[in-house]
Amino acid sequence: MAGPAWKAASDLAEGYLTLNPVSLKKYAGHELDALQKELDRLSRDLRGQAIPQDETEAIQLKNRKLLRLSQAAMVIQAWRSRMKI
Image (cartoon, rainbow, N blue to C red; front, side, top):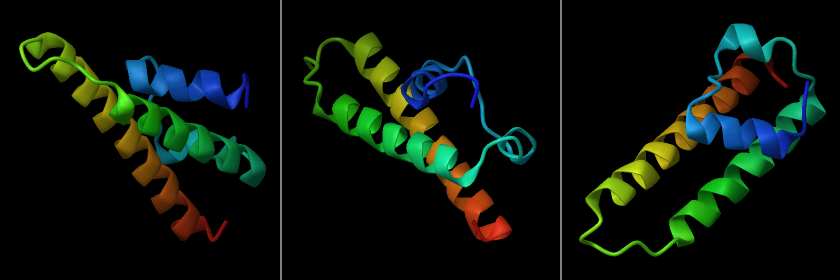
């Protein structure tokens, strides 16, 4: 991994980075473990944020970040099951 796992997870949440099977080829098993843990931690932290119901833009931003994180976690899970890692 080029940088720390927390930075990659943050970039995934912001939409600066996307995961696909081609990009996952360069990661080792322990790097995928670290990235998965950071994705889980970041999504847990995002879910814990309390946003007032009248701030629709902030709610939409939070939901987009959560969606990106869950999609990245599903891509990693599918890659692991396919490659038997």
